Image (cartoon, rainbow, N blue to C red):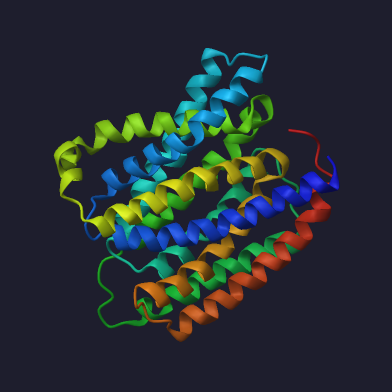
Length: 304
């Protein structure tokens, strides 16, 4: 793999980290009016519409047709990555702020590391583990105020976001063989289409066919931003996964808490607590250490 491709993959991973944080803030705004399953469905319906023309062109140039087994596997991964994950995240955002949700979602790299190591797809180094654990310490610091409160309240929001991170980690590890076998854009579009069909059926309980006509212009603007950015963002994400190891890619999601915290403060009026600021420092340090150590480790990995 050339240095240029590696740099592009890392740039794509970093851009995705920023996009995830911005989308979390926009989703936090939208869920006040749009139910979580409906929001997830609309998000990827728009994302699919953005990718479909490019997917068709790339698919026409690809000489190897996908097998039925691979199509089923990619559909299942799409439902997990684009459907279940986002529905859980949207549910969590109904109960906790954008910055805290983004911090919890930063568990993603550690979970990916553990899964990839268990499947023999990742070379583990002490520096890589230390970097990821620094990110986890940042998440713990963000939860400290609630843990220390006399009445901490329910934890459904935090649990939902943690479950979303678990889902994303599993899908990220399992995606890579299909991304190496088929073009990136068609895989992205097909996965999104599978999730849209799944969510459209699941969201019938939220009466989405009639409810979409009641959303305000501001809500639709947020939905449009989330959808278009997701279409572009997940192309970057899958491109990065195709050219880099899952842990090295997902560690760049540590950029999303910083993005979410700053945008949540600027646009939603969320308070930047000292614990959140300290958590951001720990997560940034973990990102730097993990990315630095993974560069040398990835050169020793056999092809997946």
